[in-house]
View (cartoon, rainbow, N blue to C red):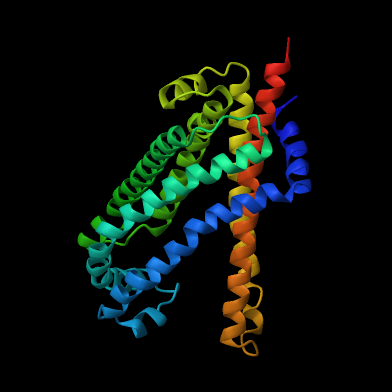
Length: 296
């Protein structure tokens, strides 16, 4: 059976066991709510204190992308210094909070799905740190590639009094994002399955990583599920954007409060749906492993 075929059955299982998603939502929001509070407490005042030309930002238009980019650049040059000053200590604190709570939360969710799993919170903390470092490295690589593409297609031509190649930059951004997305899905399944192997076999961080690279016939199924999950994430983002834009044709009669509540509701639904599919992926890994173990 292909990985996606078993994944459909897993989705049904997770749908019938809403407590899986509820626990996932609980621990994720246990991180998200303090993070939002910290942003409101320290980041927002830093932005407000910056002397930003908000009128210029409101007057930006996609009909003049070069001028809009210049306006954004000017605003960021004012906003970034005070924000980075706060982020130097706030970002590491929030990352540590995420690592600790996610490791504990993931343990609770997996043991709720399969009580026979071992508790390995310390191992999961190490593995989560490695995964987070890999994710940050991928974002850094993505940003540097886009920065290089921007220099080649926009900045350098403008400096030479030439027309910027916005189409070329957009094409480079799309291709880069898709390539890195596929590489992440194909190469990082080990980081996703290693915590599960640690709890299944009662392994430490290094042993679970080694085991994640030696999955034999399960490897292709895990990669397939990872790719499907990536596509699902993109689909969820697109759906969230579409539903967020639904009230815009009625902007003349809809109040700003309604639009805010609508977008907030769409965001909450998106986050819950995303959590559901995260749980489904973990349960799919678990079921695939149990099926693999049961084979003679």
